[in-house]
Length: 218
Image 1 (cartoon, rainbow, N blue to C red):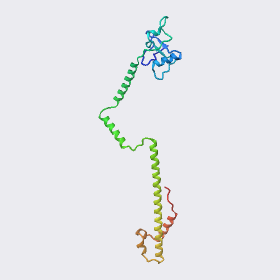
Image 2 (image 1 turned 180 degrees about the horizontal axis):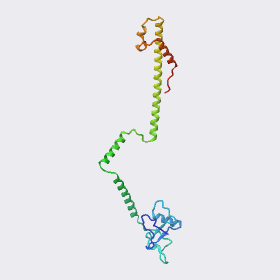
Image 3 (image 1 turned 90 degrees about the vertical axis):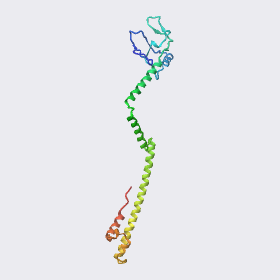
């Protein structure tokens, strides 16, 4: 038993008290395809229980010779109110837009919010537009970090070599003073005050420590 009409925008439902008949889509592939084309519903595939009401057929399409109203074999639906259906869809879309706009205030506070959002986007323009751009930036930064680590390692090596030379030179001067090869007080004129104040034994310990140390891995 039919329940409603499959035509777009048609709200007719089955009611035995109303003189409206319902008709199945024809089984013949050609006629069935023609009905589907005339219905003009996107991706529409009629089933066994898909019907069209008699409103969509002209009077000449019916065979009234029997007790029941039947469609003729060549009958096709030609009466459709597509404009009403399209207007209904537009009205629904318009009502939905109004509902959404009513939820969002259009006053100065909303305008201020939009302006502040734009300012945030401008201030945060460093943000990446896509993952590939971010990946390229990360690779570039990793290369820069590796280069800085190499430079830092070179500076540490130079510093250690300079420290060793100072310690060796200090030990040599103090040894020469201890063996009376150099005059007492010579180290005061050759060495900085911080190094001159340390005894010879401390310099020997420092020299041993310097030889045993290795550079940290960066």
